[in-house]
Length: 455
Image (cartoon, rainbow, N blue to C red; front, top):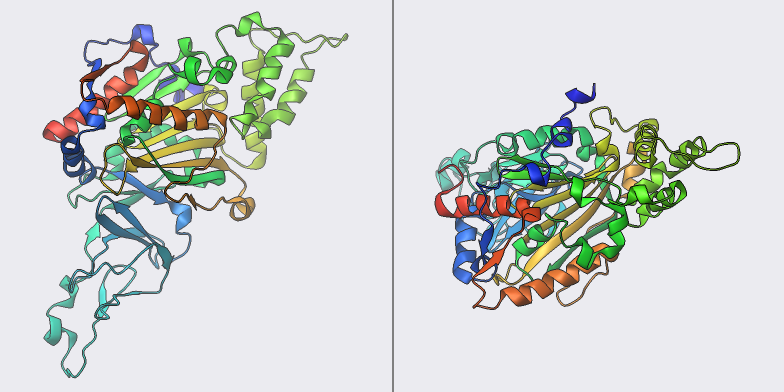
């Protein structure tokens, strides 16, 4: 039954006019986007204590595959063990602290090149160099069981590798809460990067990116070509602890003013922005033809409109290909659902595909710069995934990758915004009710920086 599907909580979530705005602060301090002292507080009170995405599981497909995750001047080693579990360790040899890994690779074990101390994939100390010493390892260094690599909390959910630098971190699933239930039916762990997997530096604060994708208010100014495909007046919202969700209902508010054939044309144009829609178009076209009368004229009803046909076609297409969509509601077949997993993971999700936007502070420590990572995830049958998987493209400093139109527009606009935020006489920014998710997001951020998430 549809009511048993987790997404029903969002289908029935409040509209803007139904939200109680009393708990929300609609003013946001501007120094959080530019001030080095604020940036330093974020480092210690947020990033060094919070669950964050450090990669995707398909980056480490085989035992022995590893990569280094770096944040500020800190680095950790992520490695898939012989048992298939991905673990995380501080990237520092226990002997003299040498950072023994860079980039990514494959190893049966790790040997520090400074003094040849060797560790297993599980972080255990296996051997140390003992020139001209005849005793045991214990005689040479003490209890080797206490000298393994320092482990940090790491877990995998929805195909994302999450890491928390805090050894006392709560379990990831406790941190995600109800959002985990909402995300599971999408089968994100079965999706792989297809067509777009780009990481590059950008001249704006990392939160400018998260802000930009949590509201549709800018569509009319920045993305006019998206207006025919979205009706912001029918967005619904959900707030789940530190995280939030909003819907992007398909269909412009003036859809009823379009002829049936014009409505169909809107659907046909969607793959330019949402590539996976192309998968469902053949079935969609067949369903449309069933709605034509003997003269070829197209007729829709309230029960069989263009929206319902897109939902039916999407569900039938993915099911036929092997994707289990039984846990998704009809709106999740057609509408974009915008998930923000605090602090830096944004996802635009619909049945079969997900565009992921991640942002981190720039390694150089400048609060006016950051790094973002854009991934288009798509569900494919297992036998097609490896061949279709898009490798990570790292863009060199000073260069730029040209994205599809709406994303390129965002890339340009976010840097213009940062140029304005640099002005010290601008003390705060003002939020509208349509930006309620930003108000929630920054209230969560304030809680982390003022007293820690749990007080």
